Image (cartoon, rainbow, N blue to C red; front, side):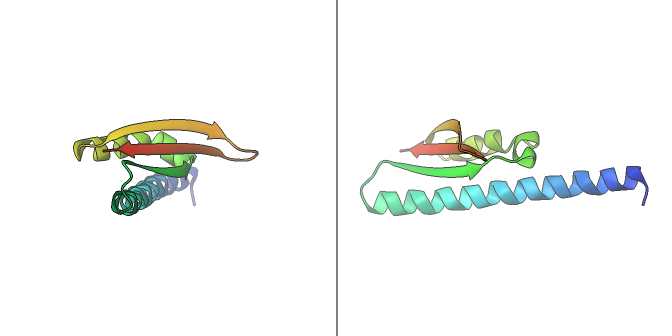
Length: 93
């Protein structure tokens, strides 16, 4: 395999990984919104472990746009644990 081929495969796979992470985060938030709405709450929170794919493919922007388009107010915050950088999202309605 040539370096050029390896780069192309990596780029394609990184995009797929980012898309998968974004879709999982959206599904997780939608479940949390439904659960919290049923319990009478007016916000939902999820946490996402940041990855290079998430950052490089602008998944945070896509996540926020998705929920803002649905009418939610979205806030985000980044914090670091011992080994992981965590991004938290709060959707309010």
